[in-house]
Length: 156
Image 1 (cartoon, rainbow, N blue to C red):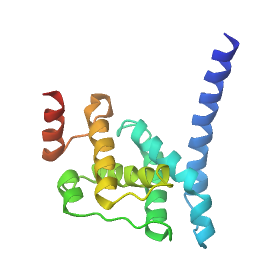
Image 2 (cartoon, rainbow, N blue to C red):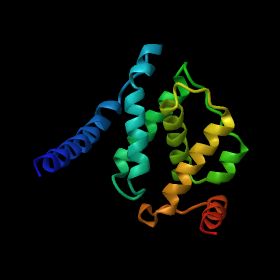
Image 3 (cartoon, helix red, strand yellow):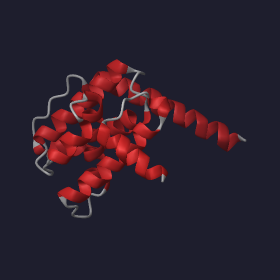
Image 4 (cartoon, helix red, strand yellow):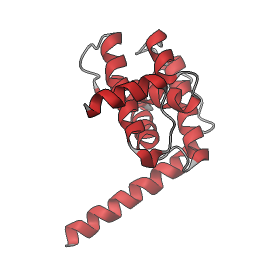
């Protein structure tokens, strides 16, 4: 029982700490290659926050998280990101879907740091994350036509 309470307390503290970090990252300036590297755990936290929180909740924090991810993606010397026509079709002009896709891409490359993923593999893993997010009706995000097709094919 004590372990359960401890685990629950730690989880609550982590959520609180993450929420506080958003204020700290709002004005963060990447100035060197090392800055990008040291912020990688924060990028993963931001991506997990975006992918784990309904689109209609904590909107200011969601905005700060995606802005931080975008700054990191634009400047990191360690990774390059290809956003091709497949991503455009998947997100179809929906900024929420695009934000989720970019967060997913960041999470994929950072969590698979030891392996050399192709652009197609990064796309596929990121697409799966976005589709899974859209599959949860509690997230209240309108799926694109492509995502609807993918959801439908999952059910059959």
